[in-house]
Length: 428
Image (tube, rainbow, N blue to C red; front, side, top):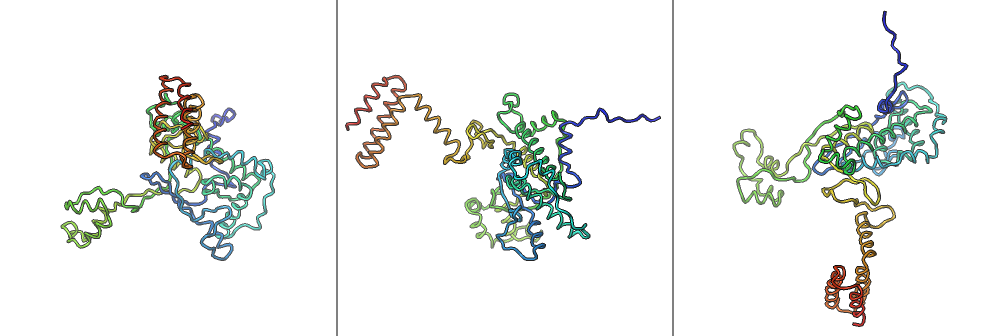
C-alpha cells in the first residue's frame, strides 16, 4: 500500500520565493529582446549593442521609415551602441530606489491591481500579428510603469515580454525588479565592499567571497549565458614580437603606420611563400594585434546584471561607500581613499575636493596660526592682483610667512609673536 504524500509542512524559503518571482507567469516573462553585449577586459568596458527590434516594429506598424535621429518613446536607446565602465551600471541599479518610484507613480500598486485591462479584439492568427500584440502590450505596461522604466538604463534596455494583459502583470514586473535589486545589493556588499567585515574577509578575492556567499545561501555558483567570440582589431595594441631588423623594430614601436609604409615592399620569407600569404598581412598582424572579443546575447535584466557581476569578479574589483555622498564607487588602485570623484547634485566640485576643503577648513578652525596666515595671505594676494605689491615682494613675504607659521605651529614662537609679525607687515 503506497504512503500518501503530505505537503502540509512544506514551507518556501526566501530563496524559493525569489526564484519563483524571477520565473514570471502566464502573462509575463522577463526575456524579450536579444541585446549583444561584449566585455573589454583591458579597458574595463561593457559594450551593449541594443536590439533595434522596437524601431522595426514601429516602422512596420506605422508603415513609414523614421529619420536617423528617431527614438522610441518608451525605448529611446533602440539600435544604439552603449559603452559603460564594468561595474558602474550594476551599482547604479542597486542604488536606484525603485520602491519610492513605484509609490510615487501616478498609478499606485493598489490601483494597478484594479486597473481595467484593454480588451483584445481577437486572437492572433499569424506570428506577425502576435508580434504586434506583444509590442502593444509592452507599450501599455510602459505607460503604467514609465517612471520606473525610465529611472534606470538596464531596466529600460531589457524589457519584459508581456504575453497577455492582466490586472496583476505590472505588480509581477515590479516584484521581479525589487527581488533582483535586493539580491544584488547583498551580493555587491558581500563580494566587493572593502568595508564589509574588513578584517574577517581580508585577503580573500571577490570570486572566493562569492563562493562563500553561495555556500552560506545554498546557491549553485554557476549560471549559463549564450556566448560567442569574434576577432576585433581596435587600436594598435602593444607590439609583442621583435623584428630582426633593429632599426625597423624601433620604427614599429614609435609609429606602427609609419613602419607599415616602410615594409610594404619587402620580399616574402619562407613561411609566407609556403602559405601564400603577403608580407604586409603578416606585418600588420605583428603591428596591430587582433584580440578575441567575447560577446553574449542577453535577453533579460537578470542576464545583464549577472554578466556584469561576473566580469567584476573576474577583475577582482573593490568598492567602497563614499563618506560624503554615501554612494558606492569602484576603487581604482588606491584602497585608502574614502571619497569618490563624482560631483554631487547641486555642487560644483567632486566629493574628494569637497572633503579636502572641509578637512582644511576644520584644520584652520582648530589651529589659530593657520587662520591668521590665511587672512594675511588673502590680503597680500589681493594687493598683488591690484599691483600695489610686486610679485617678487609677495613671494618673499609668502616664504617668510610660511616659516613663521610653521614655527608657531611647532611651538617655537607664541601665537602673539606670530600675530605681531603679521601685523607689522600691514604697514609695509
